[in-house]
Amino acid sequence: MSLISQNPVSRIRVKAKRVDEVLSIHVDDKDPENGLESDSEITKLKRRKKQKEKQIELEQEKEMKKLENFLFGSIYSPVEFGKEAEENAQDVAEDGSALFFLDSSPNNVELSEESDDEEKIHRERKPVWVDDEEERTAINIAKVNRLRKLRKEDGESVISGSEYVSRLRAQHAKLNPGTEWAKLDSGLKTDPSYDDESSDEEKRVVAASGYGNAEVVDDILRTNEDLVVKSRVKLLPGLLEHSRLVDANVEEPSNGPINSVQFHKNAQLLLAAGLDRRVRFFQIDGKRNTKIQSVFLEDCPVRKASFLPDGSQVIISGRRKFFYCFDLVKAKVDKIGPLVGREEKSLEVFEISPDSSMIAFLGNEGYILLVSSKTKELIGTLKMNGTVRSLAFANDGNQLLSSGSDGEVYHWDLRTRRCFHKAVDEGCINGTALCTSPNGRMFAAGSDSGIVNIYNRDEFLGGKRKPIKTVENLTTKIDFMKFNSDAQILAICSTMKKNSLKLMHVPSFTVYSNWPPLNKSLHYPRCLDFSPGGGFMAAGNAAGKVLLYKLHHYNHA
Image 1 (tube, rainbow, N blue to C red):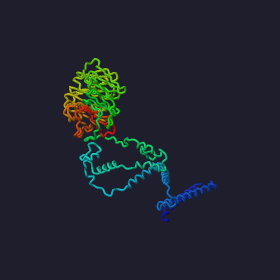
Image 2: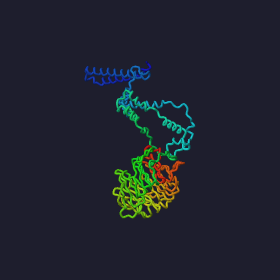
Image 3: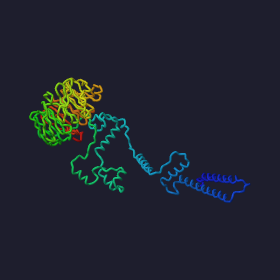
Image 4: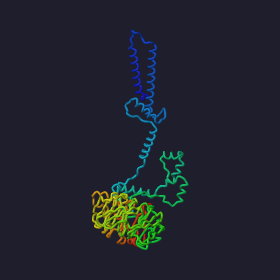
């Protein structure tokens, strides 16, 4: 102990010596001629001297204990968390040399917990052996079919060996999930601190939905609904996963070619109409496809039938100077026409605006007839230079696209009834089909040569005439085109050749190689439609059948 106390004793002695000198100087400064200080003042000085000596002895003991604790551990008292930080803060505050101090508030507990977590992470065991070849190895996951599911992007092909190993492990964990969900409730109930929902939120524990109590579990077991919902991912190109279902009109096939098929906005009702002068409605479930109703039009072989987007009516037309309107609510058929002031003998081709406010018919000599969907009266006309062959609405029904015999695509503003843009469709002599994507960003233009050009609307209106993609998979006249609900699939149809129906993956602009299906005839396809959710696809052919397919990428009809 003598070695430990050498330095502190010397310091204390120096301090005591200085105090004595100060006192002696204070006493010597007094003038002896005026007399000595009173006895009370002398006693006060002596008391101050004793107090300072005691303070010096306390500091000496404190410094000795501190040094002994530093060398031999806490001998005199157990360690108390937070005390040392407070003492350091006081010392620093007295010195005034530091710009900050330690805060011993409850937040320090959270910081210490975070540091403990970091230490646990660092203490995790490292692998005994690491293969250096993994980093130098390159694997092409796009070349092997069973490895394509490991891709994260469409164009990804070559990855490193370590990345390949990590993706395989992730795929294994995805296919073989743990059973923690089965133990979650029991773990929460056995926890003594589990009181209410607030305690769960404080601990950031969330119980699996549907397993909160036994009653909910019983309700789940009584239903046949899907318990697992796949996440929304992008549709991949190459191969389209699909399966053939029972024909949509299996209960009552048509006696003539099917010219129109369309799903109702509720995705359960499908209409099918054709040259047998009947419009049939079916409830689509993929198994029975029950027939609901049939409407017979004695004097009008149906060329086209379409729901209004609001789902209240069906517009039916043929090669006649009048058309029909079927009210779904009242189950009533109204014959409308001929249109006042017009001499058209055929109103067989038309398009309905997305807001259900207007119907546009093809007229004679390049005229486009605009009819109100409420009053069914002619409210305006538009005039092209050539013969009009196809129409398509855009911009929520405020704009209309048209094409025809002059090979140009017209853009009309329906609010002013004027053409605000006109440009030639590249390589097109006679335009036969038009189609716009649901979001209005793209449009496709088909011609009688079988070529389909896909344009970006903004670029096309800005003066760029080059299409972003030209599809040349068909060699006969394009009669029909249709985007699906999320614009990832474009269907292209020609009625002049068997199996001439192609499906294109729009993001990559590639045609699916497994469509149409091998060894399965589509006959002469004439029309097609996708369900609102994308899960069903219906195609009508010249044999009077409506072929129904399930697209596995989409979870809902």
